[in-house]
Image (spheres, rainbow, N blue to C red):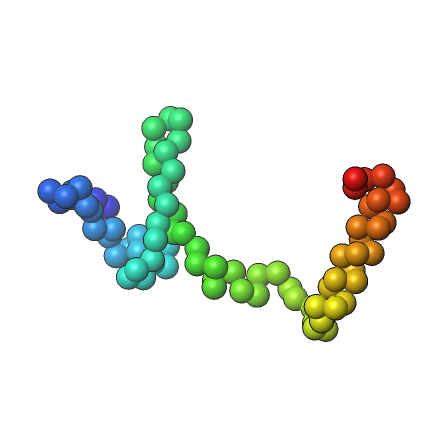
Length: 85
């Protein structure tokens, strides 16, 4: 497959490649140049596509007071162990 460059230096990615990379209008792509001179084009993943990749576990909500308490406890543990000054 090939594509011609426009005067602005732009090229159209052939449909077969767009389909293979699952690219849609507005998607961003990354270019990587390897030491041997070859170039790799990869889609830049949207963060929304990563949703569900790591299995989640149900967590209970924590109040600000509980967070502050945990931070204070962690800091005091660190001081006791000599890790914080």
